[in-house]
Length: 521
Image (cartoon, rainbow, N blue to C red; front, side, top):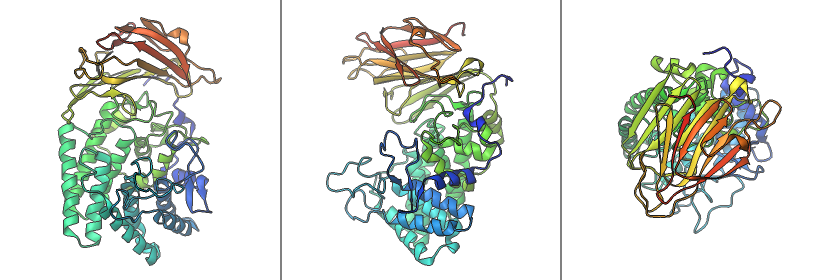
């Protein structure tokens, strides 16, 4: 590792600071004693929750567990208030799809006929809050008032009985992992062998898919890999099932090895492609998987933004810190060296059987990481899915975080392949054949494609990226000159936030773009 490697934002925070006290203190900042819950922290849940004047429920439950773990004077009293407030927002409405879940936020009106999932209610609050309540009982039941314990027990029963049959399949890895341990443990507490068996069966299906794919179905997700690790750690530590305990240890180790393969330690990021992501640079938003790095390797080594900032993008996930601090286990020795230092150039290819079948590829070299997703199951490169990605090191420590990123976007099916230091992207107009790395003739009108090129501002706050850096066949980005071969026509280059939005119009067959570093392999 070179001595002039640019500092990441996490390096600015105090070193040697433990995850538990920092994450609980973050919750202290947002606690509202008037309602016993946490306000939506600055920078969190944007743009999904546009109003900061709302109170969060899963995050408040995480905070309550953190208070019990910290154990300062009055922490037990406050944790009791928070848990009581969270429980008061559970729905008990048999026959509705929101039966057993909790308010999306405390201020949300109760759903009614025609309610829309994810908008009017979040069904996964059952699993996020339910597993937190389970951990609370596992580690602090004896310190809690018996009346509160009884309420938690009833809430857990309602969580598992209220879950609609068939909503959560094994391919929904992070929620399935949480659901399975809930069923096993609630079945144990209520002496229900059928419920325990159902939980073990779901877990066995998660294991089978993980072993077949080489990782979770929601592939390479910096946020949901953090929840997958939580689920597998719960299997390992918070279960009466020997089968779940053994599976949890195995899958947890397997996921760490997969993370090690895709992690570029010098860039402080997982290389793409990403099935689901809320950002491109983990030094600029809080991805839950970074909390596990912090617990194992310390804050300075963790791929995280500045946790001392007043506003942390996606910072609500910092409140899961107490669970991570309590449940984190060992990291496999063969993964550690890749997780703390860059171990050299590597080409990665993963065939994901699905369905749908996809192929993930990545190329990592000293200061560059490329990622691509293709195959018969290629879908649109939009929303949380990022099938074509670039991370690179900015020169001389430019920018606050020192990392630039490129993300491709198109509403048509998109296939990308990262091989030998080049990224090849093709799209197929909707209604045509699924795209692969060689393209294809589609049956619809091709959608416009765009690249979001992003970099943090310089130390003086001025943007590092200028529209003049982007031309039809060459992009002279700071630290990354690229040759750009495309079948499309450059339609525009405009400033977009701290970066540039580059758009292309496609010919009838769709887009084909090849990005290759000038002077590269």
